[in-house]
Length: 258
Image (tube, rainbow, N blue to C red; front, side):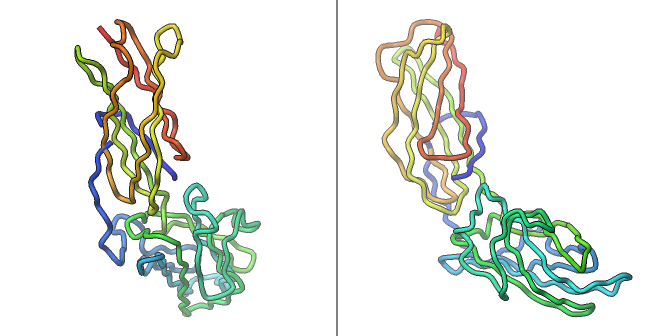
C-alpha cells in the first residue's frame, strides 16, 4: 500500500466514499499533448467493475523532419503500479517494460508501430482496480527512427494515504488519536503499533490496536487509550507505525505531560 503522511489532529474515521464514476477525464491534467511530431490525446479512463481501461490516440503531425512512430510508452510509477496490475493492453505487441533501453521509462510499451504523418492510431491498457479518480500528469516517451521525444499526458498516478496522529488527554489518562485516509484502489487490513519513549530514551509503553479493514477512498478515525498508570510529568515521543503498510514512514509525535 503506497502512502504519504502528514501530522495533524485526532483519531481512526470511517466515512465510506465509494467511487461512483465509471469514466474520468481530469480537467487539471494534460489530456492533449504534442510530443515531437505527434499529438497524444487522452481519451479517458473507464472502470468496468474489475479493471480500469486507459485509452490514448496518437496522430502524426505535418511537421518538418517527420519520421514514423516506431514505439511509445506511458510511464507508470512502480511504487504503486506493478506489472501484475497490468491485466491487458492493445493493440499487440504491448507489454510492461522496465527501464526501457531507448526511453529509460518503466511502464506500458506499445511496440513495432508505423504511425505515419496524418495517421491516427489508438491504444489502451487495463489496470486492475478502480483508477478513475487517480489520474494526473505522467511522463510519456516516443521513438521515431533514432529520435526520442518526451512529454506529459494524463495517466494513472500513485495514490496517497494520509496518516495523522495526536496525543490527547486529561487527569483521567491519555489517548492516542489517529486518522487514516486510504487512496489506493484496494482493501487493506492493518493495525497500529504504538510505543512511547521518555526523554531518557527508555520505552515506557508499547501496545497495538486490534486489526481493522479500510477500503479505497475511506477515511478512518479511531482512539486508543494509553495502557497502564498515568504517565509522570515529562516530555515524551510517541512512535506510530501501521502493520503491513509500505511506503509510510514511522511517525514520531512529541508531547508533554505536566
